[in-house]
Length: 146
Image 1 (cartoon, one colour):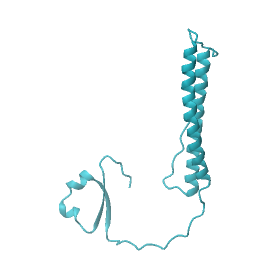
Image 2 (tube, rainbow, N blue to C red; image 1 turned 180 degrees about the vertical axis):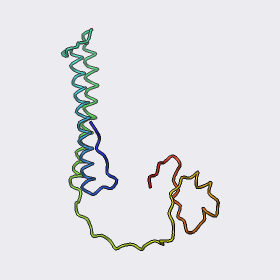
Image 3 (tube, rainbow, N blue to C red; image 1 turned 30 degrees about the vertical axis):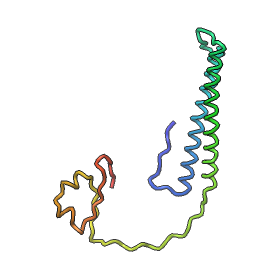
């Protein structure tokens, strides 16, 4: 299953769709977990094609039952969280307020440069302090696409 690509900028509708998609993907994952739990029970009871070599004891069946019960309880809690998340996403306001006034224009003579920390420290002090340059400094381990 391929994951949806996330757009760089999201409209409100796109954001709601991404949330609903994530909920659906969690539901699919949960269904696989519950199916595996069902197969675990079938295996312990010997009702699958590839039966265990030794039949399960009552103690084994009780252990499997307890394990499955724990998974089902966790699944129920997850379902409640997902239901609330979906309700919140579907009830999200679609109203958008008016666009605000245009902000002031920046000084067109100021140059903006993005640079990593290490490269910035190698620049001469007068270049670092040049009032005509706005430096955007980011950690070296981040790949910034400008």
